[in-house]
Length: 148
Image 1: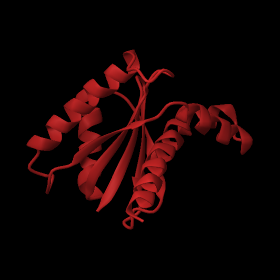
Image 2: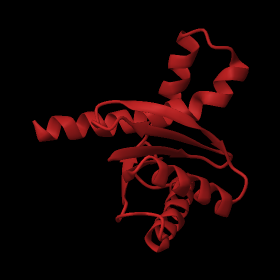
Image 3: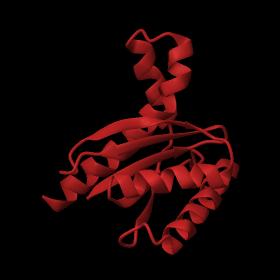
Image 4: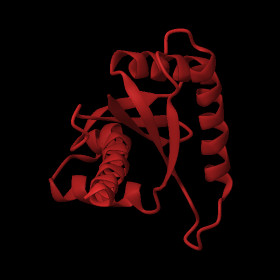
């Protein structure tokens, strides 16, 4: 069993996958969005391939904790993904969707990439994957601490 982390944006979706022991998050890739159907089909393929049981979706809240336009778009996309998962005969068991506060995650990812001296062109290609890793790792760390 694994957990998938998503950083859903208008043009890209950052994707991360946990290790089987649910200790670390690794970047899968940045999915450059083409159509909702194709994006969801790609994610479902990865969910099946990696035997994902939970999907942690970064929810972009406003600084005051309210849901803004991007948060609404993220929820709408995630609901379509959940519907596809529920009706797919390829998915072995129900996949749980978990929303995770992602405030400032992309800024943290960008800062980490800048500090590693990564060139701007390369940063643009991987920042969403790094953000997905941060979202997923935060979830895994919190879950691990709760279980102790």
